[in-house]
Length: 75
Image 1 (cartoon, rainbow, N blue to C red):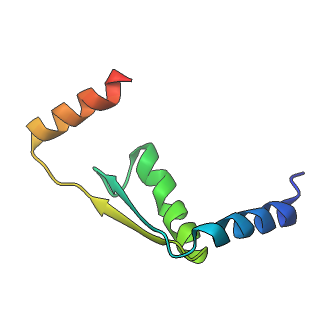
Image 2: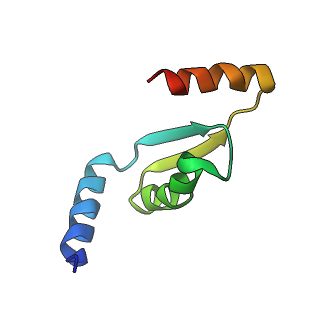
């Protein structure tokens, strides 16, 4: 069993150092895929910690996304 109280306290403590920081996540889709699945719960957590978190969806045509997919697969 995971001891959650200590973990929560640690996250809150670390969040204090980041309070007021602004973070914008940019993704190509609002649903589906690993990034969107993470951000749907991550953004509210950051905001609860006082971090100004936002999530923007990038728009583009098929050619644009073919290029961005090649960046992703290059790693």
